[in-house]
Amino acid sequence: MNLIDFKLDGYDYLTFLIGVLAVVAFFYVMITLGGLPGKLAEKRKHPHAESVKLGGWIGLFTVFPWIHALMWSYHDSLTIDIRKLPKGAEIKANEDAGDGGADQLSATPVLSSATGEAEAQVSAQSEELPKSGGAA
Image (cartoon, rainbow, N blue to C red):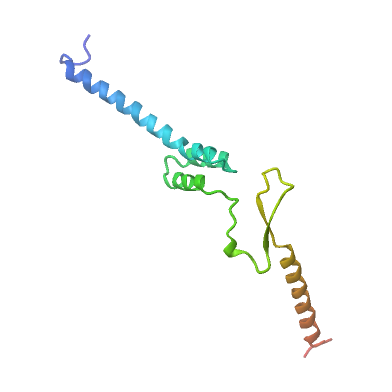
């Protein structure tokens, strides 16, 4: 019982071999690309390496989340841009942390003085309001 009505020659077997190699190469490339953001994040000691790894695998077939995970693997979320600090805030070393004294933002004095100013403004505005006991 023959399923095909012609004899297979060398070119047919070569075509099958190339097809199998193409499928294997496709899956190898997809597995390599899916794990790339996670491997980069782990190599760079990213604080959210597991999340980057998941983002790389989840976003593999939809492309845009994969690109986001790739960019995220290069961004460490511990960097502080000193150009965007509030007035009066300063950066001081945190010796208590186990990370070797990484810098930490200290804006507490600014927030406490801003809170005091806001409370003063609210009390001043409440004194200016007319006390009406009934309809005007």
